[in-house]
Image (cartoon, rainbow, N blue to C red; front, side):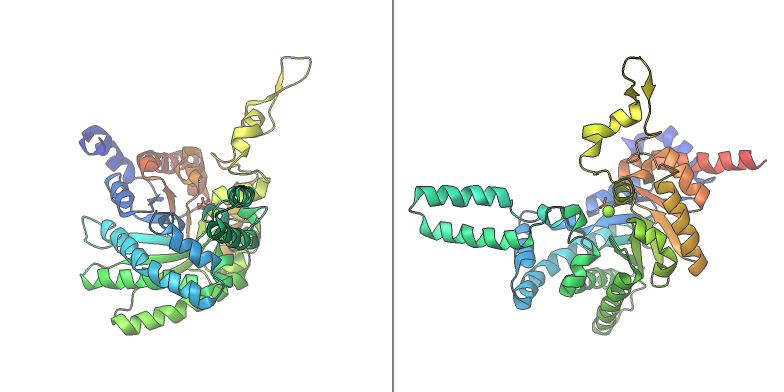
Length: 389
Ligand code: PEP
Ligand code: MG
């Protein structure tokens, strides 16, 4: 029970005086956000909004939104999702208040980033159902419904969903999704601001690879923000930024920085796309043997293919180089650009030392890793002072 651990809390408070990195947390729900504050998080670095769509009462509406044949049908589904989202965000803003100042901590809300297969019914299962119903005979109405659903799902089916209609691509093809989410974020922020709490939402766009993608989303967002400011009479102080999580974004970070107020490194996808290793499968299949060492046939020697598990610790020659490059390029275009990390590496002490070295403003990790991150950030700052002596 962290709140009762007096000695640990004293040690962490001492560590906080030395660290340069901010420690934020990844949290999708008000409950997690509240927990993060207890552990000492000073902001939310990633709220993955697609997780909110998975809830039982929402998933069928989300499926209708994805499978909609017309814009009107999609809009009807989005209109039903808006109140849920607004309440989600309001809860997070209210949980993320600095107990000392009464001001809201920064909250980074990422627009939807779904590999579509996570939302849709399984194509294979539907096919089995249809075949069974065809063989059985009888159930004509059910068969017809399943056939139609199968056809709709087949049209959206992808062989490689992680490289498919994901991230910003979805909101570019269907702008009304971005409009709904932006509306929910800014209306929630305006409602909390009306209660006298200063809120600092940061809207983040996933899987951007080219500046034109980000520019177009920014245009969509600014239009909605103006409407909401007029409707509510509250000009919410929001920021607009992007994940850097595919190599192309790192390579062109100087261009991307022209339209971004902040970058957040998504090192889970950046590792997957830099190494060409599936983030869902590689660790369970071959990767740990690469790290542990492969036995040389006929000897007892082992040869290591990789120095570290790149999904856990930043590989300084691989993903680390891309991060360092994007930091440099981003700052060249926009010296004041805010830089952070929200991939799993944000809670790994060795990666935190790297983030300190390249001068990020904060790391964001799961709430339970926040205490260790606070210590690791202090250690990174102190050992840098030692080295520079
Ligand atoms: C990432 O890719 O590092 C990231 C934080 O996003 P997600 O894990 O949601 O893909
Ligand atoms: Mg990602």
